[in-house]
Image (tube, rainbow, N blue to C red; front, side, top):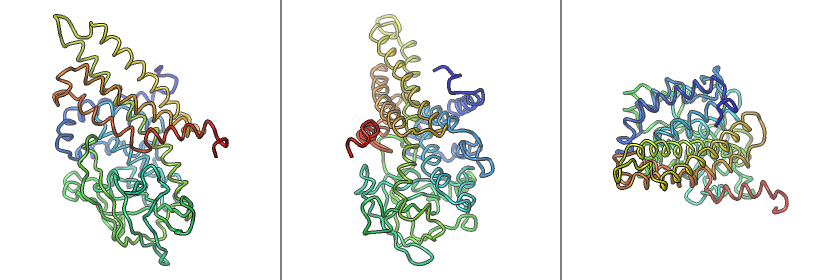
Length: 408
């Protein structure tokens, strides 16, 4: 992609900074974190120090004061080396922080955003429930008005950072009589991290209750044992008579569903950038491997079948780049981007599954071992077709944007 189309010199500097961090710090240890399914607290501290948890937020709120394209570049570059690190930044920023930035009051922004933007604590987003995945309007978690607070009961599943995080934007049903999507409200809930010892060791990831009052009754479940994204923390977020003060209501009561759909539109660009990074990282691994590995007395890359596979991967990666950065540019400029975000997410996620599978094939037997990163990339790719709206949901979103009132 021609760098000047979307990128200024500043964007290129951000890219080089993240690329250097990914190659020198993340790459040497990514296999071990994946193998142990261990959250990379040491790297989280370094990413916080680099300002990676607050890229698009104002400096006055503890952010880096950069633009949305800078943020998408960070996700793209991290994912080339390790998807778990990329989703840690993406889920924290898009899902954990942007609802507060988009819908929060000045007071809520002042209370929560500096803690999130500096990486002092990690954030997350609670929408998916055991009976409400693609059908996000099927929320069963309830919030009952008790005067100066709400009492929440229910649970959210597959929540990134549910264990390690401390600030979450979640949905609950405040009007049981309203039509499915109309009686849902967004809340900011807080809890302690499950990794107090680690956060104390690294000096980041936890705020004392004086700085961040915690909501009683908000708990996390056991850590999910996953196919991919194994160094990312995924758990159930549980509300057992959870006490959430009225000042933690995010935006108007009964308007939460619309707010969260808006958040997911942006989230799709983040996942698309992550998927793009995975695909491009797999391509880079293939170019290196096939150039050096010999069969029949010559480099594997000299065979026409390999030429064609690499050419197809490179072409599709370039197409995905245009879709991802175009969607990001539209969002940054304040233009409508729902259809373009869904297209970028659909194309990039399905591409990264194709590209990483082909990368394993091109590595032959070695590709099936943990000696090379392509097997991890292939495992990390699959969730990109599922999380933040499945491929099927993206196709529905795109079709609705195309057909509009014709199908209502």
